[in-house]
Length: 309
Picture 1 (cartoon, one colour):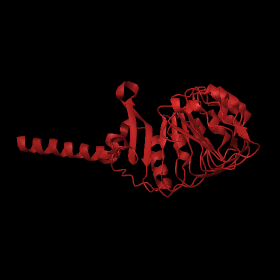
Picture 2 (picture 1 turned 135 degrees about the vertical axis):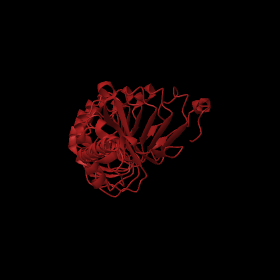
Picture 3 (picture 1 turned 180 degrees about the vertical axis):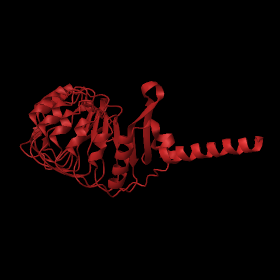
Picture 4 (picture 1 turned 135 degrees about the horizontal axis):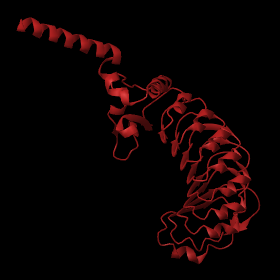
């Protein structure tokens, strides 16, 4: 009788285990129940469009992260599992740097409603930037070194949480949207090596928290705006190889925090050497083909950190 009872209990246990496997889909679904199914489905669609080799037999929050010591290569999906007394996870960061991805930018990133960091640096991704991303609470967005085309959607100006927007070295075109000036928290705006046209919007005068602005290698035109003198937190300014006109505004002297200043190939009339005497921490100074005449000022000798002139 004891043996029969034992077999009965064993059979019941096996049945319950089978039922659990059917209901929860094996170890992945059981482990992944903390991650909302909407985010799992979004990841599957994103992986398909990016052509990322993700293993969905494992809980995405348990995927093994990998990166090089200098962070130039990274494959990392991060979750925050502190929600609802640590019973719910949400994806907060995706870093796929130098992963040879050849797909397109996925609109489904917008379904990861807690995503604050998206870094797809140095891949072969194409397509345009989805305007739906404007709903994300992004702090950092980098698409550096891809094949992204089209215009920057004006909706990106709604991501007021953005601290860093890096779109360098792509195939972006058209004028810069004036709505980017609504990014009050933005510190780094890197737009170099694209196909932009038109002038730097006047509304950019409001971007007084910028520390790094790069617009090299495009057909941006017009004069270098005087309002750059209001960007007093600026540490790096790159305006090389554009279609812009001189002169360099004299109020550039207000940028005492500049460490890197690179300006080249200005059109227009001649000018004297710009007033840079207060930039004593300058590390790199490039003023090439800017139609500068007159003497090289003596105060350059006081820039003891200067490495490139």
